Image 1 (cartoon, rainbow, N blue to C red):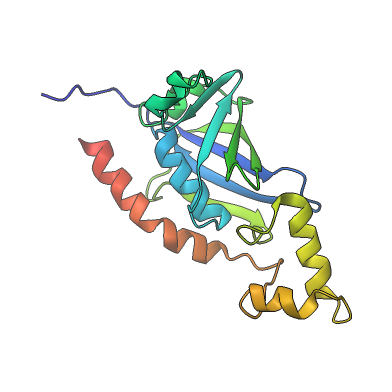
Image 2: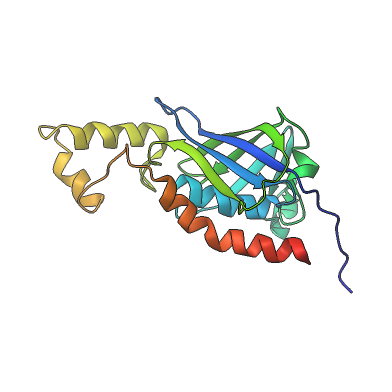
Length: 201
């Protein structure tokens, strides 16, 4: 019989900021303290607008969490703890706790995660939910922060030598200001339904 783990009822208010972006690209999320980092990864992908096409990891202090690879030990790589068994309340247990979430080790999109508040759940609210944010995440595979700002320069200036090629690469357009709270929460609904079922088991 599977071991049942006690899960707290608290809700964490998280501020997630894509580092080195000016003005900052950020999201504010309300997530159950009982979520694992594995599920938080799914939440972050949806909230930020990434496509989950690359590897990722979390860092909390000196500890790394992700999807352990048995070959890492053979290659003497740093130990990676399993994100599927690390619950938020275990690794970010109080307001003010911080973590770094890195997506795509090539482009190296680093996100600062801060627990702003620990709140009681609100009746009638489905979690996880996004309650704020600004700006669209960069296009995938654009070359990290420097490449992102090169893309913005190119598409904003019709005289730029890479203007047409960049628009073609983007599929015709990219609005860096576009961010829809409703769209994010619509895409979070499957995770909300999953959490309701999981919390009852």
